[in-house]
Amino acid sequence: MDRLTLALAQVRREKETLAVMFLDLDPFEAVNDTAGHTEGDRLLQSASERLWGLIREGDTVARVGGDEFAILLSGISQVEGAVAVSKRILKDFRRPWVLDGHEFHVTTSVGIAMYPDDGEDAETLLKNADAAMCRAKEQGRYGFQLYTPAMNVAVLERIALENDLRQALEREDFVLHYQPQVNVSSGRIVGMEALLRWQHPERGLVLPMEFIPVAEETGLILPLGEWVLRTACVQNKAWQEAGLPSMRVAVNLSARQFQSRELVNTVTKILEETGLDPDCLQLEITEGDAMQDTEFTAKVLHDLKVMGVQIVIDDFGTGHSSLSYLARFPIDALKIDRSFVGSLPVDQSAAAITAAIITLAHSLNLSVIAEGVETEEQLAFLKERKCDEFQGYLFSKPWPAEAFEAILSRGKRRARPKISADFP
Ligand code: C2E
Ligand code: MG
Ligand code: MG
Image 1 (spheres, rainbow, N blue to C red):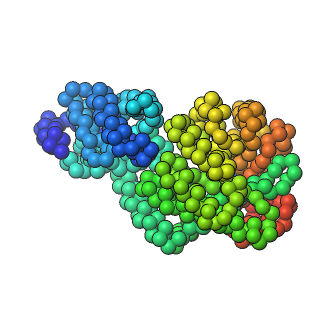
Image 2 (cartoon, helix red, strand yellow):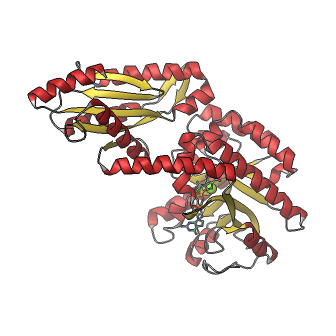
Image 3 (cartoon, rainbow, N blue to C red):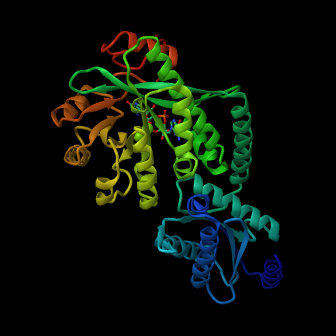
């Protein structure tokens, strides 16, 4: 603050500009959670050194708390200069971090505020650079963002959302919808994916993409994720006891949950509590999360596997997989991301990628499921390539438990050719 105040006095006098940048490390908590606080501290030190090496003499880097850093660029006449520095930082941070022999992938998002356009005093500049950083995160991680006044509104909305989420968790304002997973050749339902919905008192049904990122950042995902796991297991067990065909339920795990040391204990506890056969629980982790810290992933997956739980790599094809790890991880299936499936069969590269994933899965003795199947043409393509299972609006959209039950009782008949709001 002292340096910033001084620098501001100087640029004010000389009618110059300066830039304040705000950044934090993503996902820093994960390193703390998995590797411990000593490693976390070391990461902060190593980040400081990297930042220090990327700015000019006379500029300032400060750690402002937690995993947050602020940078003051004083000799800057235009915003382009700050953008260039941001790009340099982002590029450099993409190099893996090696700490104590472990490789971590930690990166950053940068927010930029310029004097005098985005603020005339130190507090405002820092606050606005922070708001810009939050926006950079929302737009997909690892980018930079310039401050705009509209961001203050966005930050306020975000705080409101966080408060709402806390309340919703207390009141259990959440519900799971279930989407059938169907065997391609028999047309029979063989499983279901549990998908989280938030029944917001004013906004109605809110989709996960709107609140899971906030739940992740605030740590609320841990209790929420546990609720999802328990509810899905309880429901599946109840259906089995009601005499409906026995099948598995797939539950999505977020990065933070997967990296938490408690995961294996939580799953064990919930299976015991509910009495669900572990074979009837499938956990979905995304390709990106699985490849973050491969050694850690291998250990957790192994522990889960010993329990008898099934593991699926979700959104496959959108991350960067190390194929040698893929072969070594004890997984059961790959799920082809709906972005490829949605472009079938006309888009040649989507078709090539889908076919390649099916071949890859089968040669690794894994089963393969396609998500987001909406048309007969897509299903025909998958059938021809011997894809094992599919899921998508063509068969059924995700439904609340009661409606899903009705679909189960009707067996292999399609719920509806297309989604319809009045079902059942
Ligand atoms: P996902 O795991 O890849 O889930 C599939 C998404 O595709 C779901 O969106 C589903 O409604 C949608 N979908 C299904 N069939 C079709 C189709 O034919 N066409 C199209 N265009 N979309 C289809 P949803 O329910 O909005 O969930 C989005 C994402 O949110 C999920 O992606 C998952 O990553 C996350 N999510 C959902 N529930 C949970 C949860 O309980 N915990 C965690 N951590 N994440 C969750
Ligand atoms: Mg999923
Ligand atoms: Mg998916």
